[in-house]
Length: 474
Image (cartoon, rainbow, N blue to C red):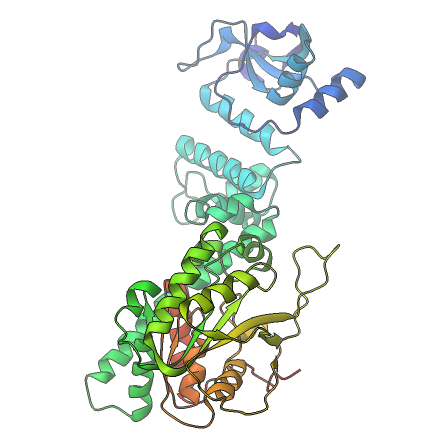
């Protein structure tokens, strides 16, 4: 027995020990899960998997306790037993000296056997196990036969592939810059968030380089196409609507398009549908909608010409009355029946009891008495939604839809002055350019402009399209 105490980690004595004689220490696991369920199970069936403790006389390297036993694994079972007011609990008492490093490794490995871990919890555990082994053995040196500990060694210890362990550890590392990872329910969701974050970084770098190239060309005698691209990049302004609209002279704009969602109640949809994180939206609490939409309407009325149009997208379910009232108070004449975009998306966050929503709505409002560009056009615009490979922005409206809307209200004339108040994808700016109108857009989202730069530089000015294989009409 004496030799076993110093040589075999798996040698132990099995007996019932008092709960009040067990030191829990500073445990790795903070969330105990549904303890009442486990406590009820223990009360009915008993404990079949004893906790693991060590006699505190065997603790070394500064790990001390005033109690007879130190818990190595099984805190959740301990807490459930306490909830049941048990006096004692079945325990395996380790019969060898353990270092604090070994105690940490045992606890981490024990927690890794849990079935209810989130992807982030599992990633954190594997990252800590890997770090502990590298701290003890050092990082493996390059070349065959190198000493130290590598990721492949950690994977072998855990009985998993190197690629799987590497990705789990990456989930842990990336959680510091992608807070949404903590809410991911599956590894696939977590990996998707990481992939989208990396794609955004690549787009941002590519956009920076393309913009730098165009700026360099702009300083020389350049082709008309490059000069037009350079101008389009300047027309998407990363900035606050209220600050930027102040720079616009009053009574100078022919048409304003507004899509002021500001991320209101979009967080769950963003998480479900991917492509962006909720942090890409300027968040506005629903309670502030009335106040802000009134300010938007007043500023829009100020800069529009005396006979001009305002187009304002809104949620018909949540903000129909509030949006119409705000526009009318600013001085606009609002058609009570909104225009409708009918598309082919059946998305709903609650498919069990709600039909898919295949429409989006916008009010069209007049300052003065402008005439429609297309007389007799219906209030229905039928275009399919952009496919995943055709869009960057989760709520991206197609360029072709915007072209039809612009022609409906402005007609065939050229060089109209237009504004996209909350530019998002920038597709309204590109649609206006296709139709030879001047447009500027404002948005706080730097990520959105990076995607816009990618579109501007990838296609020829005046020929921008969302749909790759058809005209999008459904």
